[in-house]
Amino acid sequence: MFKTTRLLGETFSFYSLKEIMAKANEERSGDQLAGVSAESMKERMAAKQVLADITLADIRNYPLLSADEDNVSALIESQIDSSVYDIIKNWTVGELREYILSDEHTGEDLLALSKGLSSEMIAAATKIMSNLDLIQGAAKIEVQTTCQTTIGQKGVLASRAQPNHPSDNLKGMRASLYEALSYGIGDAVIGINPVIDTTDNIYALLNETKNIINEWSIPTQNCVLSHVTSQMRAIEKGASADLIFQSLAGTEAGNDSFGISLSMLNEATALIHEKGTAKGPNRWYFETGQGSELSAEAHYNIDQVTLEARCYGLARHYKPFLVNTVVGFIGPEYLYNSKQVLRAGLEDHFMGKMHGLPMGVDVCYTNHMDADQNDMDNLSMLLGTAGVNFVIGVPMADDCMLNYQSLSYHDIATVRNVLDRTPTPLFQKWLEDQRIMENGRFTSRAGDPTIFMNLI
Image (tube, rainbow, N blue to C red; front, side):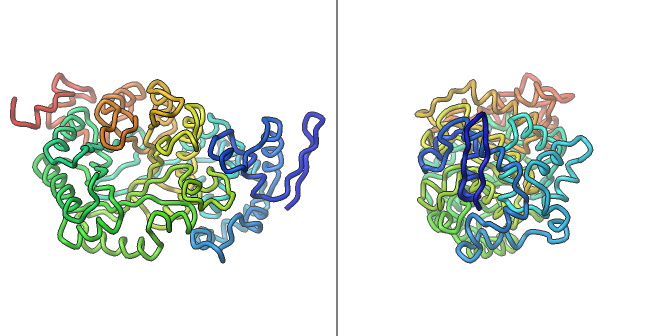
């Protein structure tokens, strides 16, 4: 594919769809590191102009990574509904953007449309959208999923409690979780990142979280975010797991670097449905994040936004309960500053929702990135207006095990309050039963973890 355009007296030439897609991205350090980014703002605008006029059929006919080379590509291709695609294949990327943003088209319309779209088509539309476009498009889409409970309802902002401990001490984990619960956090999942990735440790953490859920009759689900094989061994041993977890990449080689394959994910799917403790149909939890393929040298000179979209194409095959991008976790090599993190968070959320996924975001950054907690406050509010399914909370916004900054438990409670969002209905009822909430507002008991320690 060869395209040229003239912009402000200068002619720009592009020699492949891969080049056009990469140079149409908003600025980010990962694309610069990979050597695929636009060299100037003018070249970026020229690439966006060219991309807007490319048809969806062109994107399908000029694959960035062929299905013969890569099983993620093959899976994404197999998901395209021909009856929908045949109606829209001659649309330009610009026309797709206009359809998404039109007030005439609902979230249900967008989900129906997405059945005929590949991940690359969704990524292409994302590249020519403003931040406000991304918020408007995502806000239309409601994706509900059910594990033990249901999340994704309009007006609900669910949350993951992440009570990590630097030595996986069960009492320390409990203390952190009690604080989360006292702020109304944990309705999406109680999910722990373990330090020690052994069968026995994963077994102990899963059973401890399930014991707390049962002890207090908490309407939520549990998960331990270790490698999928460690979870599988713990579940085979009899651990109580509602969800099974794995990080995903957007290429087969990227997933190889994570030590996973599609056959392994299929095996884990069968196991969690046979021996998991949840009742609902959605039992996967996936995490992603822009830049993971480049960090594994598995990016094939494809830009990181497009690769992230391909993660969502892989994820939707498994009908997950939860998906979230850990947006600023990988570091400044891939997202340099707060502006890039904010843009990536909105991009990822929109692309996930357009794939029909129950999309959440870990609103986070690392301490060597040019960002601070105020930037995370800004992103959390924007995502709240965009209808994000869930966000993640850690004590005082500082994860003492993973050494990165996220949202605090009380930050999430504040976003709910300001935007008039609620926990999931069953969880809010539970909070009222615990006298933590009354008439949708916190009582004086909120924020006091000792109410779960039989001390008062």
